[in-house]
Image 1 (cartoon, protein in one colour):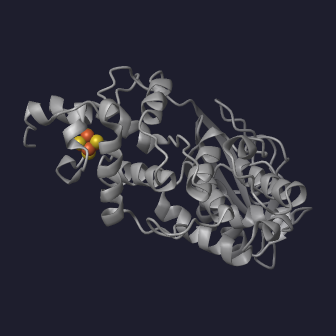
Image 2 (spheres, protein in one colour):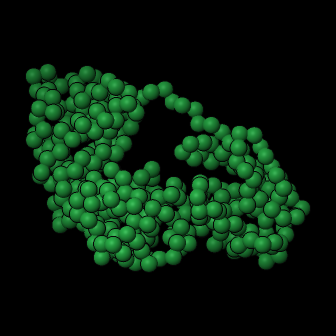
Image 3 (cartoon, helix red, strand yellow):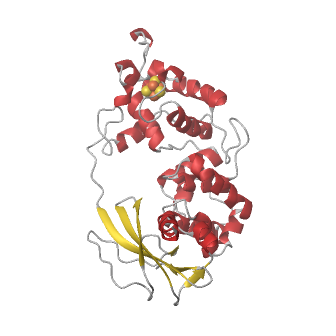
Length: 350
Ligand code: SF4
């Protein structure tokens, strides 16, 4: 990396207009084309599409979220359409995106916008924050991108850019308030939606995790991390806490017609309201418990899955039998099940 002469290096905070202009110019030329965007400088996008994309993108990559976004907007083109959808249809369409509480919040929010706001999203951060399931990040993103409000939109990408730009020595997660304040120092009234998306794009494509591509960055002249020669050091991180491991058993039961036995999970708790395979409890020690129905159960191996707060090893048993279940054709089950159960079903089918 070529060193920047010290005389051209300026603190980003003291030169916010120049930083904004440089990044917006870069965005006009290099911003990503995404299904939910209307392009730099174009008229504002539909708040419904912005909100839906932001909810889907939490903890999910743009590549993974895009087919879901296209499927949702084709099936439910407006917030009123989504509000009128059956819970089970939305949960099935969400399967594979993970973090299923978000799908329930999505429906609650759509119904609030449709029922209490006449199908029109509130156009301020405060108004958006009052909607069910809408947190600070989503409210800021929708306010900036859909309504042109100068909101401070800070996701993981933006945190990383700020940590490098200002060479923040406090490790994450303690640095979050400081990173948010620094990001706020750069927000201006000019093209706030494009600014938010430009920062996200810079973080995703140039100031990316690991080694940043500083040679392609429009902000090197203001970047303290670059100036110090080791931008990849930032953001500093506190030592990782090991995820606890749980174990359990999943039963893949098929009937004489080849359908698979599913159960509707309780509304509250992990994967609440979703269809799933019958399972044992998931705990630190394997508690197999009684199978859900009599069958000639066979050991089909195990699958691994990582949730936010724990890692799970599911031992899979397969067998044929009957009983009081939601009997579902295998193809439909594979399409509708959350990822952890889909993996277990595939293992059980051999
Ligand atoms: Fe990130 Fe490098 Fe740009 Fe600094 S110069 S913001 S480290 S890509």
